Amino acid sequence: MSRTISYSMFAEDIIASKYLRDGEQQFYVDVGCCFPVVASNTYGFYEAGWRGICLDANPDVIEPFRQARPRDTVICTGVGGAAGTLTFHRFGNPVYNTFDPDRAARLKRRKPHVPVLDPVDVIIRPLTEILIDASCPERFDFLNIDVEGLESEVISSLDFERFRPRLIACETIVKNVREALALPVVGQIEALGYKLVGMTGHDSFFIDAQR
Image (cartoon, rainbow, N blue to C red):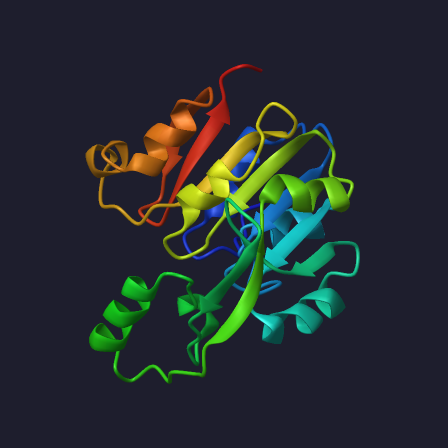
């Protein structure tokens, strides 16, 4: 993929493409995929012929996603460290949906104009288990994580000895590198053998230092 048009919120797909020009598997895993085209970090790769596994806990986005991206495996599920169920807090704009009750409460205070929908209980599964069932390649190119505050749980649920992405984009929402380095999830990813190589303010990028 090499393009100058971005579908992402802050050109994350263009940044990712710089590190993935020679995609080995041309395969991505998108956790918290939400929209199939607009604001997607993976649609540019799909448009270039790639395919992948796309996960979202919101049942309302699954069928439109499947229709827009038929090559992808699209699964309605939450992702966490242990199998079970969690309450999924939903809003009129699904980009704000979250499993984090504190984050949901803050959003209601800060953005009272955003409609609040009824919460639903959603099945949670470890990412390793999901990727095994979906026949994911063990060495794939791109892992994108945007789960509104539970990124650390997603990382913890993946066995990096079995499945190892070359590049990770993780939602961090910070103003500068100093703030990014202070986040626990950044240290968690670096401890797995990844190097922080870029950020947009919304997402941070990590390249596998072992390749």
